Amino acid sequence: IIITPISGTSIPATAIPTITSTPIPSSACRYYHIVQPGENLFRIGLRYGVSYSEIARINQISDPTRISIGQKLCIP
Figure 1 (cartoon, rainbow, N blue to C red):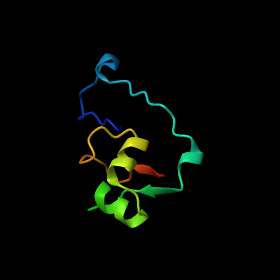
Figure 2 (cartoon, rainbow, N blue to C red):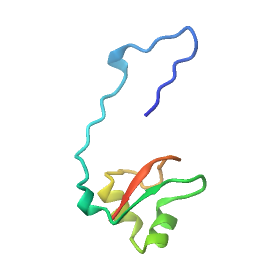
Figure 3 (cartoon, helix red, strand yellow):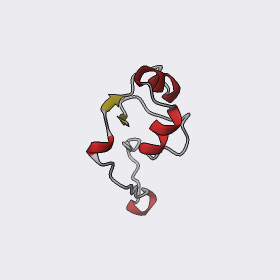
Figure 4 (cartoon, rainbow, N blue to C red):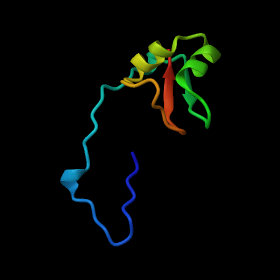
């Protein structure tokens, strides 16, 4: 997450959420995919022959409709 404050404003450290996640073992990934504009998990899954729900699970994505351009995904 990149937080860019508007000029002249500041964000208190307590307002920035801490994100913790369990690391994905590299052995679980057959490929890595960088999300491009217009892509979604369903189409990425079709490309690699993996269900979108499995990609979401392995990458700890709670809402499979929300991925970000430039996000690095582990493809099992």
